[in-house]
Image (cartoon, rainbow, N blue to C red; front, side):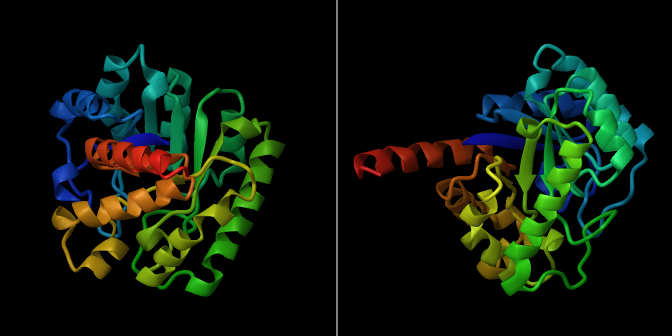
Length: 266
């Protein structure tokens, strides 16, 4: 299991403690790597329902210091954006990953990305475009089937555009990306192994999200323990990547979990 550490270069990410001023972007990236992140997932714009829209020009300005500082380690950098201009510029710089909350819906962008080597995190969201919303989303009983249908279609479209299959990572989306009902996200968590039916790596991001907070009855700032429980469950179900605000906590907990599993003969 590999860890994506979240670096939010924003002023309106839902978890206030994760908001990193641009002047501290490089320090924040190094801190995540030192804490055990395998990849720094750089977010130049927030995607929660209350977030402001950010132009591609501004996104590129925000990510520039991190790309410059990690120029010799770009394989450890992911750019979390759904804006085509940002995606293509980051790919041209040589980043290791692009992370799109809409799963690369533009056919022209898919064709352009076929010419690069970066891996593509194809996320499912009930929103066809833009930010997450608080509107009703998937019904719990149909969620996994709907996500699989989306994955099948999008993987076929990416391959048809010339993107090699081994570059694709799947993300079912969680929280408001699935809908306002917490049960939907928990149903997807419970059935994670089914989402590997396509034989592709799976990334899950539950860190401090609304569905965990609703059940635990806590704020985003208090949701560290709830997050770790969800992340350990996802990792134990065979997820290949976990995206988190707290790489250190997850890495320590997973080390203990796996050591115990070895002793249990599992």
